Image (tube, rainbow over all chains, first blue to last red; front, top):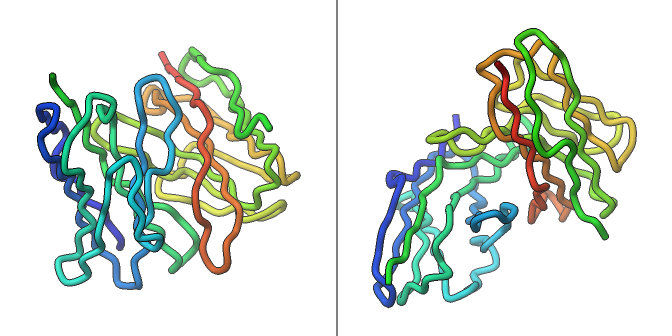
Length: 110
Length: 115
């Protein structure tokens, strides 16, 4: 069965420091991966998807099939990056479903 | 466009009561889904629908029913509420894009407490 693992419940960094939110997945098919973000008192929203190979708000994520990882990175953290981040895997076998990880709370301190 | 709307925002139930969480979207999206969000467990898929008249079970469907009579609406029914169903419930929708469904648009959530 598919699984998405985010090993850190909470990640605390100082403003200006690099950020890496870890995400590992297990899936027998071809993975389609996403990062969603939930800012305080806001709706969950898409941050980026691996297929687009884009950088959003300074964040990037590279799919590494060998390590089955999709870590989210940003070179210099900003205070407004503080939020809950979810890694998600789109599964097509046996239905069309989005499987989420347990989430990582990022706290950027001044 | 209002996007994805959910009602109510908050609800308190007693064990054994039933209720329906409402979800509507005005973006003509084919795919709609319900998740529950619990501390330390992330979002878990309850039920989903790829179009009107079609529904399927997700990861945690027990105790919940859904129907999809129109493209716009996707209500979630709790048949007999239990304290284990205390959670925040999110509805989401997305348009089809080839063989995958891309960005999911989420509603604001319903915070449910079962006493």
